[in-house]
Length: 164
Image (cartoon, rainbow, N blue to C red; front, side, top):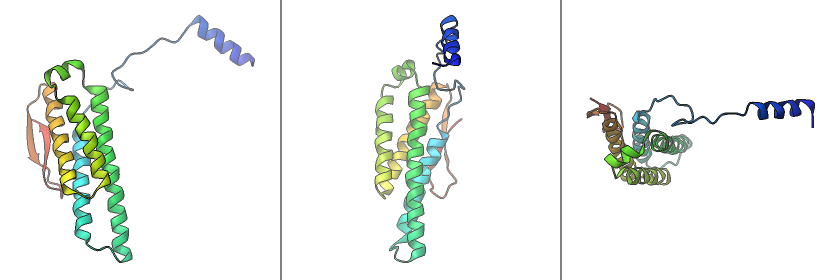
């Protein structure tokens, strides 16, 4: 054992590290379901583009298909990641008391995100958007904010939930 290791162990015994408690990995307190909504809308758009390609027989069409699939899967996973952060770091027991369906909504959204990755289905993609919007409405309600659904103004169409 080196002298440095011995010194570090002695310092640790004299001044042990204290346990820090926080609601997230970096207690920033900044949470927002917007990115999950944008990611879910991107999944819808990629499915639309894939369907519009038709028979991808030439090299250019195959290249587009591969890129659309990659982006669809990336954004379905991004939606799931953003939701996991809200689920695991933001929502607290009192939120669950106010919204007893919260766990089932998140569970459903996770499954819908996986289904959207595994398929080329507008129905699966739209189901993900719908559940993410419902979670967004609950999120803003826990902050005491009314919500409004505004046209997304994206090529995917649909709406985005915003605090009013």
